[in-house]
Image (tube, rainbow, N blue to C red; front, side, top):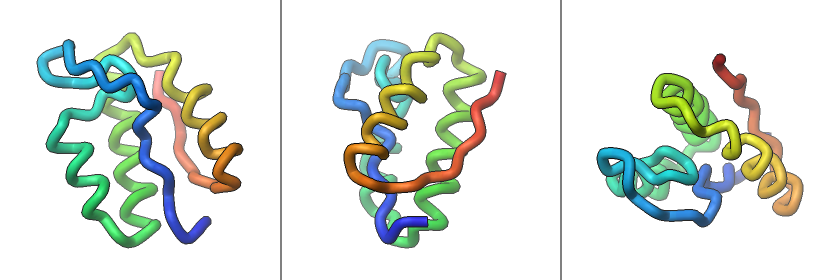
Length: 84
């Protein structure tokens, strides 16, 4: 686990789905919350929660490849399991 977990935001930031971003599924409140979380294990748990949220909302298959690319660029490792 790296010291800091990169934000799950993939720089789309268009809030159209009942206040959820069409890029990452976070709400503005969730984005603010992620920034306030300091412990990497809690940040990883947040990312996993977000993956579950994306699974229940549907239409977020583009997020994981984009986030993995971001992780690679920042040389960070985050464990998360995709849901069907």
